[in-house]
Every structure is written in C-alpha cells, then in structure tokens.
Image (cartoon, rainbow, N blue to C red; front, side, top):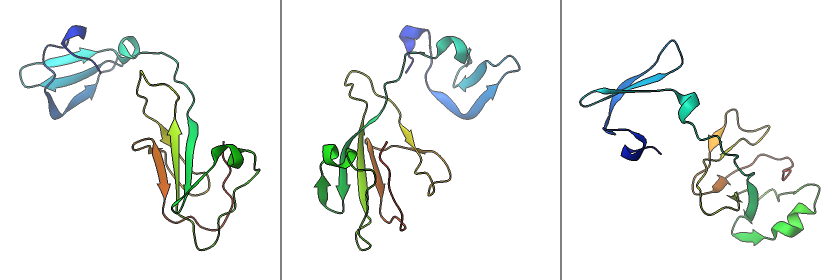
Length: 130
C-alpha cells in the first residue's frame, strides 16, 4: 500500500485509466492528473515466508494437522468430501496474498480468502499435503 507519505498526492484513481508504457512504467489516471511509477523501483522485495497448513476440516470435523502430516495420503470417504484447509504464514505483522492450485482439479491459480481454502466436492482420488 502506498499513500501520500510515499509521494502519491491523489489516490482516487479512475476506472480503466491505466496503461503500461514502453519502458515498463505504469501510468494511472486520477480525477485531477495522472501518476507514473516504475514497478521495479516501488515493489517491496522482502522475502515472503512460506505458507503452512494450520488447520484441516473434513465435513464438520477438525482433524489434527500433526497426525495428517505423518500420513503419506489422506483418503476421504465417498460420502464426505467437503474439506477446508486453513493456511498461515506464521507471521502477524504483515499480511500476504496467498494463491493456490489443487493439482489435477484447478486449471488456474486462485486467491485464498480469509486464509482458508474450501472444496465442497472433491472427486475420488488422493490429497497430498505439502
């Protein structure tokens, strides 16, 4: 997040008013002017900690992460394939945007909402935690 302390005078941006310039800078229109910035110079390049599985729910039952991680595979019963996986970066001073893809099911990367991933129906197969 950038604001006036970073030199942005007007942070009310206009919809569909952005363009990538030939040199890689980005221009965004505001109500009174436009802002041009170089993403290579403004992106905070701090290391993002790895996401960890902090909780696993099968249907309405919370399962022990320690026990699940000792297993090679998790087998779901045919009549209970609703899972929720809770993720954490184990840091509390910064917020990170996490993305995920369930290999063999999802075709694109998805953004994690509220640090939880939910699948209401999983087809037959095996889930591997990693």
